[in-house]
Amino acid sequence: MTAARLIAVAALVFGPVAYAPGAEKLNILFVAVDDLRPEFGAYGAPYVKSPNLDRLAARGFTFNRAYCQQAVCSPSRSSLLTGTRPDTTKVWDLVTHFRTALPDVVTLPQLFKNNGYFVQGMGKIYHGGYDDPPSWSVPWTNARRPQYASAENKAIVERSKAAAATEGKKGKALNKAARGRAYESADVPDNTYQDGGIAELVIQALRDIKAKNQPFFLAVGFIKPHLPFVSPKKYWDLYDPKTIALAPNPFRPKGAPPYAVLPGGELRAYHDIPAGHIPDDLARTLKHGYYAAISYMDAQLGKVLDEIDRLGFRDNTIVVLWGDHGWKLGEHDAWCKHSNVELDTHAPLLISVPGLATDGRRSDALVEFVDIYPSLAELAGLPLPKHLEGTSFAPVLREPKTRWKSAAFSQYPRQANGQRLMGYSMRTDRYRFTRWVERDHPDRFVAAELYDHQIDSQENQNIADDPTNAALVARLTEQWKKGWRGAAPSRR
Ligand SMILES: [Ca+2]
Image (cartoon, rainbow, N blue to C red; front, side, top):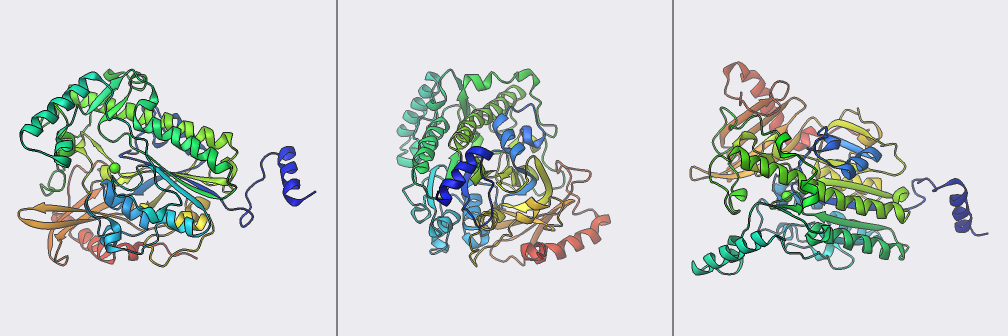
C-alpha cells in the first residue's frame, strides 16, 4: 500500500488527518466584505443576524481591535494587498493604481502564485475597475448583476439618467448621476444581486479546484453591505424597524477641527437623501437596510463555507475575512466612512487556521490590516518579501494575551481652507491621537485631536487642547513621531 493510500485509509478510519506543518500546504480562502463595520453577532451585537460570520468566529479567531490604514475602499485594499501603507502605495484616492508607484511589487495573492499556488480572484478584491492581472493564475472574474431589482428603483434610475443626459452629462458622469434610492427590499431570489452570483461562482470554482490537486488561494469579494442597501425582502424581514436604535451621538466630535468628520457625501448621491441632518425615520430605514444587507451577504458566505466543508477543505484551509473599513450610521451626525475616527478605521477581522486551537478565541491586541499579508505568508510557510510594512500576527493567534503593537496607524487626506492636509491617526490601547499636518510639508503642524477611550469610546470630545493634558499630548506626540516602526512588537 502506498503512503498516500495509507493516509487515505487512516483518514477514513480516524477522521480527517490533522494538519502538520511542512506536511501539506494550507489553502487560503480570503474573503473581503465591502463596508462591513464590526457590528454583528461575533462583535457583541446579537441583534444583527449574522449566523455565518459568527460560525466563522466560533471556529476561528476574532480580532477585537483591527484597524485599516485608510478608511475608504481602494486605499485600504491597496495597502492590505501589497502589505504596505498608503504613503508607500501612494493610493490615497479612488483613481490611482498602486502599480504606478510600485510597478514591481509582489502582491499577497501574487506571492502565493509565485510559490506554486493556484490563485483566483472573484468579486470586489481590488477597488472598482482597478484589477491587477499579475495577482492571479487565471483572469479575475465577477458576477455582473443589475444594482436594483424593484420597478420603482429602475424607474428612478431611468429618470435621473435622462435628466443628467439633458444636462449634457456623458459616460462615467452620466452613470454616476443615475442613482436610485439608497435602499431596496425586493421579493427576489439571492442571485438577483451580485453577491448571490458571487457565491455561485465561488462554489463552482471550489469544485474545479478540487479536481486540480494543487494548493489554492481563492480571493472572494462580497459587495454588501456597501451602498445601496439592496437585498431580498426575506433579509429585511429578519428585523423589526421599531427595535432599531438610532445613533446615541448625533453631533460632531466637540472641539475637533470641522474637517475631521464630514456628513457623508457618498450617501447624498442617492435619490431623495437630504443634504443636512437625516430625519429619524429615514435613518431607521437606512440602518434597517444596512443590517439586512449584512444578513444577505452573510447567507452567501454561508453557502461558501458549506461548500468548503462539503469538499473536505475545512481541515487544510485557512479562512480569513475582513471588512475593508468601518462605517458611520448616523454617529457624529454623519454617514459612510472617509475619516480617521474609530468608527471608520476599526474593522472586522476573523481568521480560522487549521492546526491552531483558535476556536472561538479572541484578542484585544492592536493589529493592522497591513499585518494580514505577512501573517498569511507565515502561516502558509512562505518566505516574507522585504518590502512589507506590517508584522505577522501569528504569535497572537497562538497566545491571544501576547504583548503586541503599542499602536495602530491610519490616515486620511483632506482639503480644507485652501490647504492640502493629511491627518495621521494613532490608536493606542487607551487613546486615539490624530495630528493634522500639511500634506506637502508634513513637519508643519495644523491641528490635533485626542480622545480617551477609557471614558469616551465614541470619540465625542476632543481633549487635545485642554491645558491639563499638555504632558499627555507631548508624550503621545513623541510616540506618534516614531510612527508604525516605533510601535512594532519585539519578536523573539
Ligand atoms: Ca469599502
